[in-house]
Image (cartoon, one colour):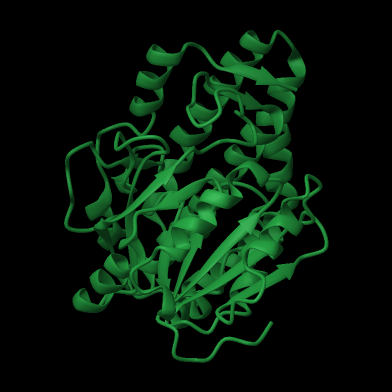
Length: 348
């Protein structure tokens, strides 16, 4: 398969890991893009075991604008996407999961939004897989625990504090910001990147006409096919998410925002205690809270190094970033989801 020329507008990077059932519709939606001839498609595979690696490779076989990258192991979200991005030549990068499909003008609309507004990054409007029900539009700010507060349904803010799930970003900015932080094996990668976008002096705005249909959480919550019918989590998911939420704050808070570490740790303790009760085992608390504290201690040199890197990028300090602070709580949407689908089920 030939290497992509430099004139591509957008390089779409899809990281695959055992997503065979989603492959056909995902790729089909890419072929229907209005600027398909200006898109480079990169499939990066983390050594899938369900045959999806071969399927994706077959689906793009013979395309001059497509590359298949075999990462050789399950190296995680950040590292896997970085390997794909290293092969990109588009002006912009658009990172996607396989469990989605794009409306025909999605890529074009995000490209236009970024170009016309002269910004580094844009966030797509995300809907449920089967219909146009609102799912996500990124985060409008952060709460007292430093967690991203979702955009309210029906609201289009002037700027986004954070893109959630999918990142559309200028490739030179992505590279200058150090790409995805490979310390993150799962969860938090887009949060880390969004903080760096703002701290470095760049902007992130919503792209409401760039519309994506997404299933979401298929690895830990597969029941229901294209619809989510229950809430399910695991020791691994919670421990990774908790660790990375703390790391994001420790990397990027300059001084006053470090105070948010105390309510964040308290929240994570309460959540872990509740999870221990639901799971009926001590090991959940040990994995998702005590183990996280131990890991943070072990990572103290790494944290210091990342803070120095962020300082080298910094154009905006904590007082400037306080414009994104909101008293709304990030977990309010999670609470409403529990009311709808019931208490979470916990896999070991």
